[in-house]
Length: 462
Image 1 (tube, rainbow, N blue to C red):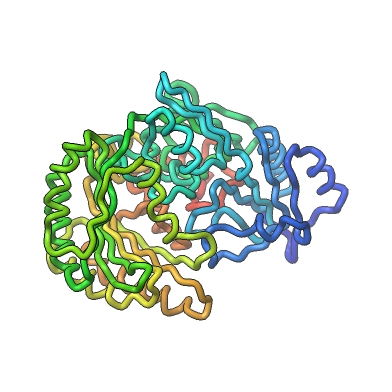
Image 2: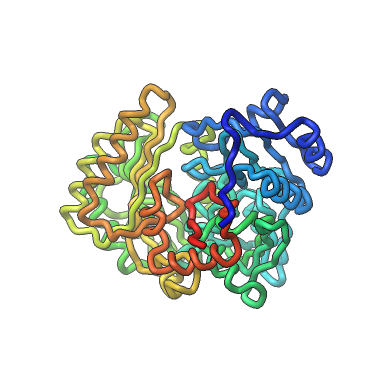
C-alpha cells in the first residue's frame, strides 16, 4: 500500500527551484506565506479555522488543477481542495500542505433550451442563480448564496427546492474530475458510472471536481419568507410545524428555526418557500400564516434569488462556527419540549436551532441510487452555534453538544455529511449507512493512496 501524503516536520521539504518550477507551470498564481495575497487566500468562511498552508495554487483552469494534483502526488504533500470555502469543518485548507484553490474557476454556462447548466468548481449558488434566473430556471441549492456549488452538491445538497426537485446531487448530470493520477475523467450515467454514483454524496473523496453539469427547472417568482413568533410560543409553533409538514404539497419547503432577531428578540420562525402558482401558494401557506399570534409576517411574493440570499447576512464570512446535526427518527411532544428547553440556553444571539423536513422528490430516490442514502422523510436537526469572540469558544461549543446529547434518544443514527465537523470515522460511516462499504470499495479501486483525505474521509482498506 502506498503511504498517505505527509509533510516533513516543520514545513514542506522542497527547495525553491522545485517550487518555482511548479509556479511557472501554472496559469494562475502560486502563493506562499509572506506573499501579498496569502493572508486573505488562506482564510475560509468558518472563523475558527486558522490554518497556514505552505502553498496555495489559485487555479484558473483544468490544466492548473492537473499540475497541482501531479505536484502533490509526486512530492507526497498534504492536499486540501477549496471550492467555496464554506464547509464548517474547514477542510478547504490545511497546515503546511498544498491548497488547490478553485475560487477563480467560477464560469457558468446555462443552456435555457436543454435546461442545464455547466458550472466550474469554484462557483457559488449565487453565481448560478444570477445566470439561471435570467431564463426563469434554478435547481436545488442551499439557503446561503455564498456557499460553493461543488461542496454542497457533492455531499447531497438541500435547499428551498428539495421537495419539488430533489437534492442537489440528484440534479447532477455529469462531472469532470481530476483523479489522483492526474487524469481528467468525465463521469455520468454512461461513462465511469461507478464514479458518477460515488461523487453524488461522496464529496471530495474521489478527486478534484473541476465542473458539474446540473439539471435546471422552471422557477419563477416564489411566495416565501418568514413568520415570526415570540420564543415562549416555540412549543406550540413546533407542534404546528410537525403537523403542517405531514400534509404540505411538494411545492412548499418549510423550516422551523429558533433564533434571535437583529434587535435582540428571541423568536421562533416558520420559514417557507412555495415554488408554484402564487395564488395556489397563498392558499397553501394560509394556515401557516394564520396560526397563533405572530409578531411579524414577512411572507410575500419575491424573486427566487431574494429567497436564496435571505439568510446571507446572518452567516457572514469570519464568524466562529461549531455545528451539530442529526436526523430524528420521530418528533414527539417530549422531544419538542426538550429541544425548546435546551435552545433557551443559547449563549450567543448569532446562533440558531433549525428543524428541516424534506420528503417529496428526494424521498422517491432509492437509498442506493446515489452515495447519499438518507431518503426517508425525516426531520433534520441542525444546531448552529455561531459567535465572534474566541474567548467564548468553550461556552458555545458546550451548548451545541448539550443539545445534541439531549436529543440523542430521538435520533435515527443518521447524519447529513455536510453538517459534520471533525467527528471521527464512526460519524462518517453514519453519514453513508449501507452505502459506506461500496464507497470504500470504490476508493480501493481507484484511489488506494488516499491523496484526497481532507474531507469527511472514506478511508481505503487496500
